[in-house]
Image (tube, rainbow, N blue to C red; front, side, top):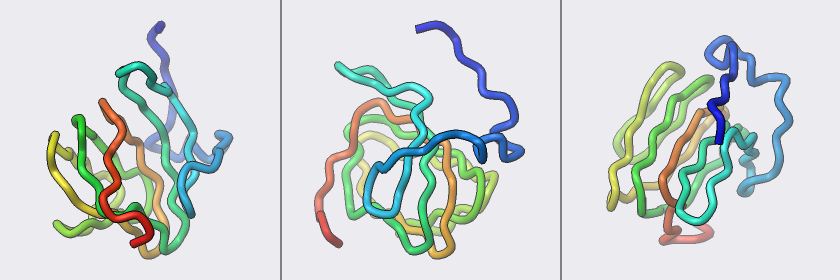
Length: 116
């Protein structure tokens, strides 16, 4: 895959990108959709009150919060925060007012408590 550049993401350049459904209340714009063990990179747009149930990280996950606040059991992460979730860690994720994050993950997460 060639190098790809996205200008202005930190300044709201993602506003004009097309998003598609990802999970209930969450939309994705894929920057690099992995397959066969390749990492994925996406922008995730969480609606107010949206979240991801408790899950385990099968691979390294790195998040940059671009807008709003994303939360988990360890705290609240406002725009500008970088969150690194190591292999084997578990948590759930939510947002009160909605947020947009840039996320890279080596492998898909394993959902532990669907519907929570």
